[in-house]
Amino acid sequence: MKNSIITVCLVLFAFTLFAQNNNEEIGLVKSIYGMERKDLIARHIVLDETKMDIFWQLYDEYEIERSELGLKRAQNIATYARKYDRLTNEDADLLMKTTFELNLNFVQLWDKTYRKMAKSISPVTAAQFIQAEMFIESMIKQELAMDIPLIGEFEMKN
Image (tube, rainbow, N blue to C red; front, side):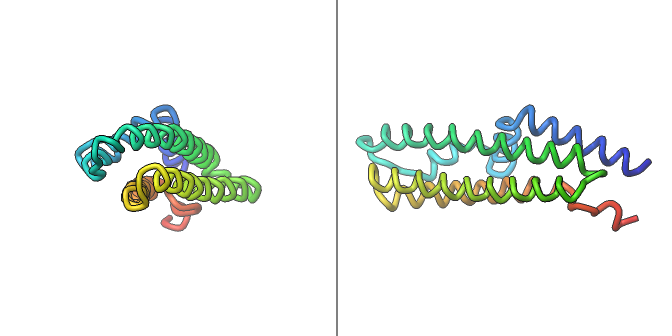
């Protein structure tokens, strides 16, 4: 009975995360920093007028891809939640491969964005932006990790 309740809670959490991925990430960033991600970046990155339009254009391109990765992460978490109490070897393998792929995709996006910004604006500004994004992403991962149980966690505590 306890496992059934936990499973229902996990599924509800995952569906909420999946349905409101951007809102959830916005909420996480706001709860940590008291402002939305774009506002946080705007306060962190100081540019002269000649580079500002280029930066925000590159930021918007980045944000589209980052949001897509966030959605894929939410889908992976939803799959984990649905299968948590009956996870097979195949399920675990696919979930982990997807997680590794998503982590790699984030690193590739940061690298691509860094190179574009370094060339168009400056390496220092590009590094500031990517460093801030990596930090924000780490905070999001930490918040998610605190809410998502480890495989077998509930069985071990019984």
